[in-house]
Length: 325
Picture 1 (spheres, rainbow, N blue to C red):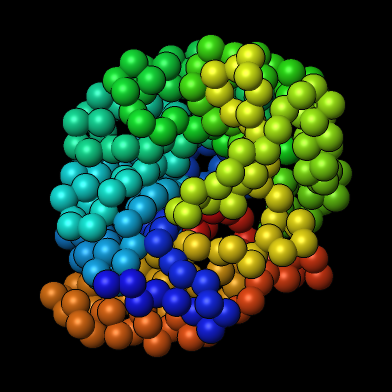
Picture 2 (cartoon, helix red, strand yellow; picture 1 turned 180 degrees about the vertical axis):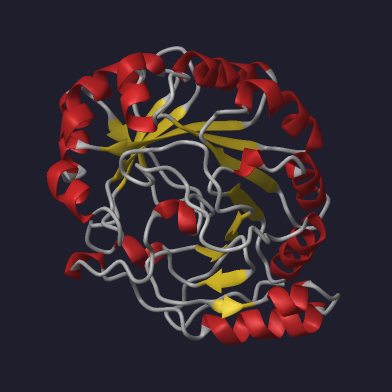
């Protein structure tokens, strides 16, 4: 079945499922003061995660990304991966992680059915990494990524936030990083959220800084797959990996939107930078697949054409850990 089409003709094959709001890093652009508990930590259970994945898979979604917060703070993450991987129609089971538990857990995740891994690394300079994240863990994070490559995880990517302080020197470091590694490094333009106005004003730079840098050095754009995220990736014949850009402020960024989001508390978010959400938790606590799909389809009619970041409007998104980025 392929029923997830919004009022603008966009088809949705990709679901981002947050499994926790908790994060153990203190990244300067997201949670500089660390995670603060503001409500009981009553997040979706493994069974509820499976139920929502089944509902979306029956509606044509084939790619599931487990996010947080930091998903690996959940001790039952491998169980969630396994349940997700077993759902008919799901061909890609992905995780986005800060890498804290990667070296210790990647073997278990791979055995459970993980097919795609995204690791957040904002700097390959050890001191720069510590300054941004609050933790001196870069060697362990890179070791976990290299172990994923050894295990044959089919798609391994690195996410880094594009910031003024780490831009051009960082580009050179990451290009060298992918010389021998078949890894895609994607820089994400810093986004304005409810809590980071001052940091955004100081550190935001346009993605053209990266694309111009790459083009001058012989890198060329690569074609996108139908279920890819919004990154435009560049390739070079002398390098095993790729360098990409996710540019939410670029014209037409939302035109090819192909993903929906479920929060760790069971709300359907139609846009990362929207407002409110559609509650699904009551239908996930019971086995009600038809009612669940009906509510999802009804909600999709309200998906907006695009975000309003250009107006300085981040919706009710205080920080990215809140809804899984």
